[in-house]
Length: 352
Image 1 (cartoon, one colour):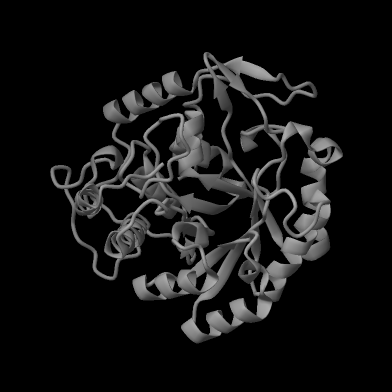
Image 2 (spheres, one colour):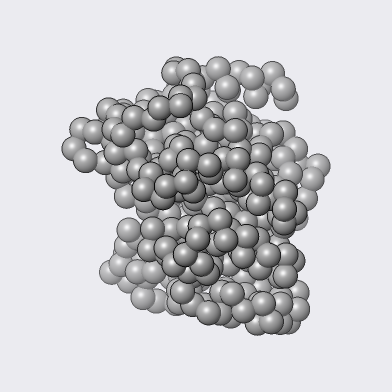
């Protein structure tokens, strides 16, 4: 197992190094990297078709409130319970429900679901939620997490213009985690783009591999937009990886959050890699259903997503044999995705 992880780590063509001086722009290489990664997976067999791997640790599958429209706490718990998820991740927003400890704990008790994580309000459009001071915002979120029984807070790296918060982010995150006893798992992001250049708006970096974080969250859609190799990245951050946002992307400039298997990322291969190497962490479905008008279509997307996770994490109750002719790689999978795509086409809607 260790040798395969080392081999995957050697797939990187560029050595990464920390720098005390970060540049503001870089050559736009995401699309070329995406093509190179797709070519690699087209020519190298990574998925083990003959054996269904499962981790010796319990991997929970959760549903993010950002996957549910409308994004209410009650609907998130309702949909998670209906489709057999183990728990939920609540994104803290302007909606007071997302910070209502009594409401969240009541719904958890009623449904029997766990609150697996909270997503801190560190998005661009949530600058004043909870507190105007960024460190206080993280402390409040971590204490909210403890109050609802969540062990993890997902957060984004800061923007360059966020002053001392950005400059002291790596050490500060570690300090807040130690103070509160809650895992703060920093999420991989992506560069913004202007023509042939990438604008590096995140500080110290959008790529968590370059920094000394204690815990990380990996998001497939963000990785797709950034042109990252998912399997290689996960192998490199394996010991720090605590949380995964299960989704997909087609390599476009948009942060798409497609259902897993509907894009071009090696999502199935990465899920199996985690199971094969006895990963211990949580997988949370974070897909975009905001522009789907039919409830049946939205629910099918959530059902297909958890089915995908169970299959490739080896969590199915019955192991069904798949050979090379019946099991295709992620970019071609239609295990429920064809049905969902057809439903969405009839719905006249698409993700963005």
